[in-house]
Picture 1: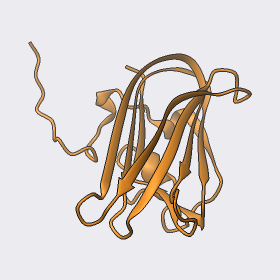
Picture 2: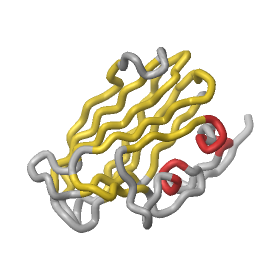
Picture 3: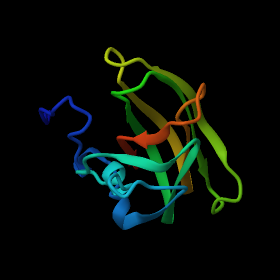
Length: 158
């Protein structure tokens, strides 16, 4: 039996864990980006700082693969240390170049700093020929003056 002791912190993830290096496999479309918190910080396997929108309200992030991918796991991490709020996100995929989408999950989460500041979600899926992954974030279901943010998004093929 082969064993490997790993760090339990979700921020310390390597490509050997099956996570795809999206910078070489896909392009990203997004509705806005704060220059101090670019999307690279959320998608890069060693990224820090995460992504934040430059505009308030709902935001889209689309990962468009250069070649269709088989997806087995998706991990999302949201962090909110400042403001209590209810956030909703919808994670979807397309196998036809973004013409039609199927929901993977739709979820709401209540941030209540300082007690509840992290939402870590990991979904095991069995998706083949995926051309696009789309994340729609409504950062403040009960208020509209909050910019969306994402600490990280990881996608695995095994």
